[in-house]
Every structure is written in C-alpha cells, then in structure tokens.
Picture 1 (cartoon, helix red, strand yellow):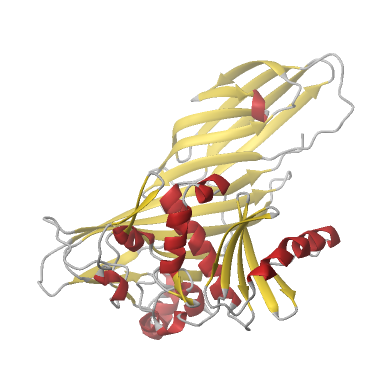
Picture 2 (cartoon, one colour):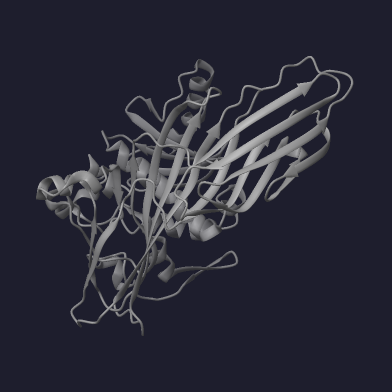
Length: 442
C-alpha cells in the first residue's frame, strides 16, 4: 500500500505506473465544457453531457460520490476552484491512479498559469492541449514533471512556442526527473525537515486530537548524476538492525517522490535516490501521537450586557528554554457588534481586524518557558442582538527553528557520484503550527 501511494504522487513511464486507464479527460465550468481530450476514442464525446446532471442529482439526494457510473461509463472527477476535472473511462481502472493524474494536472496547469480557473483555460487553449498530449499518450500517463515539460513547452503571453525541435532526453531517460550534464562550482545539498503540529483543545483544556505531519524537502545543487542515500532514526529500521528503539520515530502514511527506489526502502528501509535538480519534496509522513501544545493559551472572555466585553489571554511557551518561537500570531474571536477597541500587552502588539471579528496578537520572538499576557476591552451596542453567535476557537500560528517535536533526525546523507567530488549536506529542522485550535467557554 505504501509503495502504491508513493508512486502515485507522480505517474511516470515505469512498469508500476503505466497501467492504462483513461479514455477521455475533460475540464468543465458548471454546465459548460471548456476543453476535452479524447485519448482512445472508445468513449463517445457526448457522454460528458450526462456528467453534470448526474452530479446535481447526487447533490440533491445527499449521496455525492467521487466516482459516478452511467451504463458502462465511469466518471471520476475532482473540483478545483470553479472547475470540474473529469476522467472518463469504460474500463475497470485503477481509481487511485486516475485521481493522482487529475491532481497532477492541476499542479502542472498551476505551474504554467499561476491560477487554474476559467479565464486561464480560455486564454491558453493551445498550451493546455499541448500539455494534455504530453502528459498522457493513448491512455498511459507519460511525463508529468512540470520542470521537464517547461524545457520544451514554453509560454509567452497566450502563444505557444516550442523551445526545441527535439524532445529533451530527460523525457525518454529512466531518470526523467533530472537532466544530464548539470554542473555546479560548489556542490551542496540543503535538507529541510519541517513538521506541522495539528492540535484541537476543548473548552475544558483537554487535548481532543493531535498529530504531526512532516515533510523532508531538498534543495539540490549537485553536478552530474549523483546517487544519494538518506538515513533517518526510523523505528522499523532500528527494529530490523536490533538497535535501541528509544530515540527512534515511528512514521506512518509515508509518501515518496518518484525518484526514491521503493523496492530498496521496502527491503532494508534505505532511502536511495537520484535527486531532481533544485527544490523538491523528497517525502512526507505522519506521526499519530499525543502532542503537548507547544504554546498553551488560557483565556477569560467576560461579556457585560449592553455595555462592554473584556478579554484576557495568557500565552505560555511549553517547549525547551533554549528554543524560540518566531512570528507568533494568536487570533482571538470577538463579537461581531464590538467596537472601540483598547489593548494592553506585556509583549508584542495587538490589533483589531473588524472584517474578520478578530483580535490578532503578534509576538515576534517567544522564548520557551516564558509567559505573556494580553488584555482587550471592547464596547458593545446598547441594543442586544437576539441571535446567538457561533463561538469560533482561538487559533495560533508560529514557527520554531532548530527543533522537532517528534525527535526525527537525519543520521547521515551519503552522496555518490562517479567523478568522486566532495559535497556538503546541510540540515535544518523547523516546527510550525498546522491546524492549531483552542476552544473557549465564552
């Protein structure tokens, strides 16, 4: 299952990913087909006219499904902005592969047009058709890496220019994500281990849910065609080799970039790969564990009828004293009819954002173990609103460099290249807030 997920991040020409699945790909605006590419001709072009009525019928019945069937034709669809991207097939196709391809379409079009919406499709029909022809051939996914596509399909205004009469060798190489002949004066690899913490705390102060979502991102500036081997303190690896599991991490839902040799990882947990040039995400993972909120919030919100509302918020850094959280933003909801704001803070500054009914308390530097206080005073209208307002949670945004909650570590990075040059790997750890919410009683 992990292998399938990893491969499906970017369909390529390898054996696992070239299963035939698509007859037709269509991009629609509501009730209007914008563009359609029929790859095999075994599904009638008129079939797409049945998609939106079937979708509306499912919405009315409250039984909305990502796959809709009419007779022997299957519609597999996603929605992006105001567009529907629909793959149509009459085979028992690999649904995960179809959806991976549709999301890859969105990614490639966004790389080209910045925003994927009705106008960008209408202004670039020629480019879209050219991309659709390169992304898939007779129902088989082909080159889906936007960096490679941009080598020979370039865009100037609304015109298509073919940059080279010959398709780059990267398209037909086994290593289609990296060009040959890359040279750097100084060979370096920058590794960023970024973890986002998702936390939900109820009004009583109990942690209802928490997990860690991580990713390892690379910025590769290496000459030639190097092979890299990355070692982590992976708990499964430590178990296989009989090492102490105390400082290891159990990763779940691991997904890799297409460059990683999955068979090698499955056999001995070695992350071996030939990297793309420049920036890329090597892998992502999730750690399902109980996380103590790194920035703890206590709040008291007192509302005096027909008069005023007073808010007291206390923030405490529950991480080690040697670390510092940067650019902390604490967003506190206030009643929609509040006015005349007054603030007092022990550090940072607070401002009222009336269009969002929020007080935003900003602290540029928040050391671990410290505690800060913010008080806010708002006036209320003399006539009370009878409608009960929802009670949105307090949300917190922050970033802590040189720190990971899970304890994940890059144990080594080996760089092997036939010329034998020396290269420097640099590692940086960052912890940041994800979906970080604390509910209130008031």
